[in-house]
Amino acid sequence: DGGITQSPKYLFRKEGQNVTLSCEQNLNHDAMYWYRQDPGQGLRLIYYSQIVNDFQKGDIAEGYSVSREKKESFPLTVTSAQKNPTAFYHCASTGRLPQPQHFGDGTRLSIL
Amino acid sequence: QKEVEQDPGPLSVPEGAIVSLNCTYSNSAFQYFMWYRQYSRKGPELLMYTYSSGNKEDGRFTAQVDKSSKYISLFIRDSQPSDSATYLCAMSADDKIIFGKGTRLHILP
Image 1 (cartoon, rainbow over the protein chains, first blue to last red):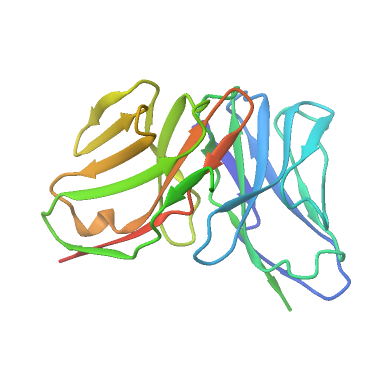
Image 2: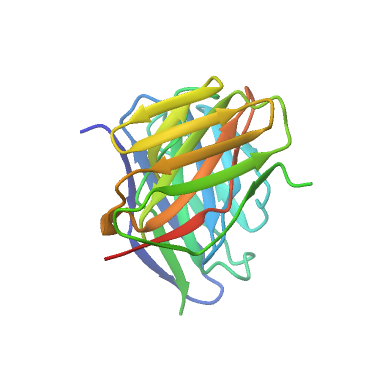
């Protein structure tokens, strides 16, 4: 089935550690997105990429980094500079705006 | 004024009732309108997607768009306990998509 796969489902980070969240899609979509969702809150855009080897900062990019070396993959690294990383992280993709985005099941990141 | 406003709820209704969920927006450039359903600890799932003003129906779900009033609605008929979730509206123009904060819905058996 076509879709978006995020892994791991749950992730724990120690102080001073960088962690990487995986996002893979087989929908042949050009654009991919990372969102952060805090409890009871909406989706906030971290980074997005409209084409391979290119990406743009969203509203809350500080403390995060991304790469887009392949069309199918858009990993997100939560660096030690992100002091409050506990949240749900959602990856999405779309063929092209204004088409709707499709989401993975999310990764829950917690601090140890 | 925020670009998209959505009442966070929670909204509790008895099983079988008609549910009405709403969003207002301020940017007239928005062309496409979406509703997503999000179960706890899951990603948002696309429910409805519409472009023009008017109604779009899919089973028990009806999406309504009123561009002149900048107001969109999602109606759920014959609501079921399995409809209990958070519903997010979203709208997009050529260069961006904006999500509402979501309305938590509880269907009481």
